[in-house]
Length: 129
Length: 158
Image (cartoon, chains in turn cyan, red):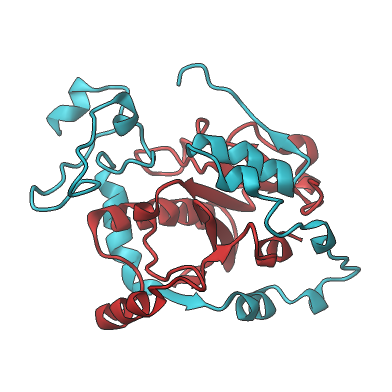
């Protein structure tokens, strides 16, 4: 067992990055805060080794980039959706997702994004975090 | 506003994951999307067996494992050339592999618990989004969509 597993019960065992690899940036030092240890955070210094292994395995099975119009026409053709009525008329280019794009933190992007695309949004606050 | 996806329900699951999917870690997509037909069965967290699709957010572009730039970017040719030289448009750095592994694990958990031939997910990095169609043998990624100005993402949801 990795020593870090027993020392840090609240976090998953983390892989150590090779010394030759830049952690996040080669120029800006990263302050060691609790956010760095949060799983799936924007900071990628501490990640579960399984995730890296999965990424390594599927790298060769990813194809793209596919043009969006072609993608939608091939995989989601609206002609095959019965009684389809588009909701695109409500979209306002440059305005609809301003709050999402302008969010300063990843957590701040969730609610603005979903409030635009869906009226039914369930937000669960976990006090443990 | 808020009417683009009348058939779907969105649940914030960044802190309430699915713990029973065979991995040592939780399946915790930022947003889990369920079909409205589930009604009261829609869980308060992530449930891979009921999941319709997942949405993963990242704020920093360095977390984006897909090397294609947004349409119209000045250095688009450089990106394309790099992807050509590498034989793929997926970055090979540890960060890129981690990121790819994360969204791949979510899709794998969904496939493992549902009888699906394919599923979709959305990967959002700051102002761009990629739609991903996952299949059991790989995945197809769209070009980055500048979703605040391009209606393609709304078309996808509608």
